[in-house]
Image (cartoon, rainbow, N blue to C red; front, side, top):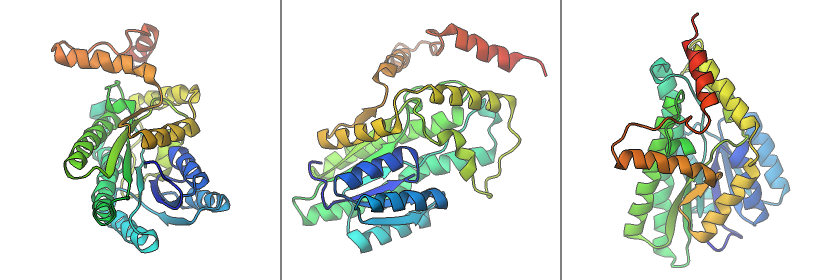
Length: 301
């Protein structure tokens, strides 16, 4: 995408983190901004801020795991602004713990938001964008899906999250290739951030009553503490990541990374796959962290 003024951005998870920062940039660049979030109070505050920047705003409370709600958002966007030009399927939740300790409710919640939320966004908005492209040779569209470096790696003690994010990477790569078959006017990217301070560590605040959490296990408590520590020490901000997203839009770049140095671990994993060798110890470079985690998980009681 080269032009932004007067065009429309649809952003899920827009009440905080990457979504809110992306909405701020979109507003400053003259876009109409559609903001969706499951947390009504955060969405209300965010929408008021973005309107204060001069943008035309459509704000809608939304649980992206619910197909009917995403479909309703699509109808509202088309009625207000027409087909969007930038769709940021960004809403996500975090979860950790040993993979066999995740309950059915954990799986349904995390997969519902992190994967099906993206799938619903792609299913609803891509046809609208392709129809707009067919009618207007000057139309430009771009879809960005938020995955994670956990979608390219498999860090231990966070299995359900890894599974959801690997699926988003696969979905996004396929979307990119499928779009290339049918148009040159609509493209796609996948965002793979590493540890960035956002509200994802407090995802439980938005967990629905229909997906109740069990009492956290030791591994889940340890995973949450380690994640919060890593995120809290992050030097790359959500605002930086939002700018990386817009840079990728302008360059039509598929992979968007917040921490390119982390790709060394991705390379090691891919070499494991190609050489059919057992997965490399993820703590090989920082054995003290691995030792700490193993000791905590193997401690009696």
